[in-house]
Image (cartoon, each protein chain N blue to C red):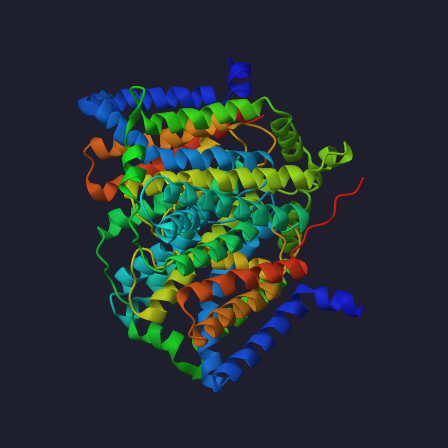
Length: 313
Length: 317
């Protein structure tokens, strides 16, 4: 039993998620209705995507505190590009998506070069670049506004072959994670996070692997920003401020060690869903409002501690 | 000391940064470096410096030591102190004792989580942040309450001796005391030992877990004391008053030359780091830039400072 759990720590997260879903359904019988499920998934999706990207950085032994600021920057760049191109049809939307995701890649490369090539400490560096990215977002769009075309948010809320688009996005994230898990990149990343000196001595290009992880993290923050844009249908330079720390909680809940070299994004997806469900259950448990933050904090810390206790070697 | 090693010494560099920032400030706005302005800046730096003292200890202790929960602990200290004082001078001492005792105990809980349960410090103190914030909401029911005693406000805002407010003397005592503790006592050597090489420290028989627990407790104590200073500085408090100190306390420590890897650095650097950080923010305010310009320059300056001396060693075969 413990060997199975140790190699697949996300199994526990899956059990926790199942329990939370059961409790939530008992408290709120309408939870299983497709419309309610879809609205819950829409709420959880941005953090889930950010958590996937954060996992790669953490597996490599680094950390990315700038994901929230990157999401804000991508959001304002996307809506500004759509407004700048103007007109109807798909052209402005495609231009906006391209501009937003290109911005994310640039942010990821900046983080990666500072940390992996210039050898700065990831935690302080990504905090500092986060300030710069957030400042740039305020420069691009000083105030919330700039509505996106109807086609943008309508298609985000739509269904495709009977399933909501948000579910397709989640499945695409999962499929990407599973695909990348079979590529050499993740093996290299695990090696770099597990033993930096060891990986260096085998001749692995450490900086390329670590920059790749930061670019993935920024890209997924960009995807999350596009989802938030689809949800709010406008730009907001202050969006996503809690994403960085929540995504780290999700990664740890999913069984990836902060010291690097183990874990994977599937656990983080479950971890992000567990975090969202804990909020749900507390809301529907009918606790006095003032107590909700405290109880949520206690449950999250207990879950984190439990996860660490079970998976520690 | 060669010129190059002198220039890359964090203490020298932080001191140069402070002088340069003063010169820039004075050029941009004559009177920036006037005596009373500097005293005002030092008062703000002292508040940051006191919370950074605890942060410094936790980081020195190593094993990815960091304390993200200082923000809500400062808020908690301010709210507890404000409610006990309720504007009465007689209640200042009980208020300080209660605020620091509660945050010391929270810090010890952080320490127990980090040492006994072996939760990574980042995660443990992040979890504690949510819990203390939640506790504050329950305690205050979301309504700001309590206010500072006049004597405490005078101690922090009005000149006491030689034109300097009392808080600067408190900060000086903390700086001297902490530096003595770290450099001249067995406890201090033990802190550096567990930060540099925990395994070796354990093998020579140091009570590694007990020391690390105490470091987190001290971080809580200093955060609570900072909370008392914050309410003394502004007169009243609200439940997120401490949030702005979380990352700035870490940055003050890093600018001051303490390695985030633990085991190297000291508090004098952190003092200079706190002064440099407050000066930088003040210069950026003087520039009357738009908010985004201030943010971008602030972030860039941090990156440049780190590039100058925050770099880690090169890997070698």
